[in-house]
Image (cartoon, rainbow, N blue to C red; front, side):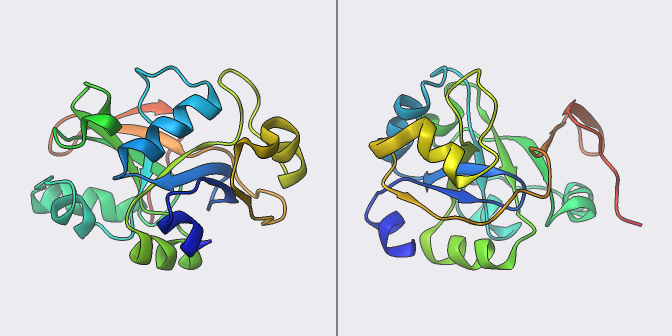
Length: 182
């Protein structure tokens, strides 16, 4: 899988939430291919999986104060995707100057991202359809449009919760319900 991703292939894997189409986030051609295969609205950004909070500043140039970092640590690693302002990588933010990031709660996935760099992750379905609940469903949907499929069993969660960090300490919940760690 690592070799395929580094060779600019796209695949379907079980993330820490659901099956997703993944590829190198920093490679514009890979990202555009995922949009085409998924038939996704080209104005709608996708979630980026990172390996650490430090990736936000080191790779994406997002400088957060300690208050924001503490908020992120409340639900990362985990199933919460957070929209943050980001002017770099227009092929990812699609002109919106913000990107949804998630630090997944799956060690193998974090280890993979450490070796490949950030990954685009979008649900394994055509735009507007229900996300695949198994690798068999994903294969029926995409056939040979996808370079590799990794069967991870049945998803144990729903799609990630989506929130937007509005100020230094204000979250707007856009999808799902959030429970902070105790």
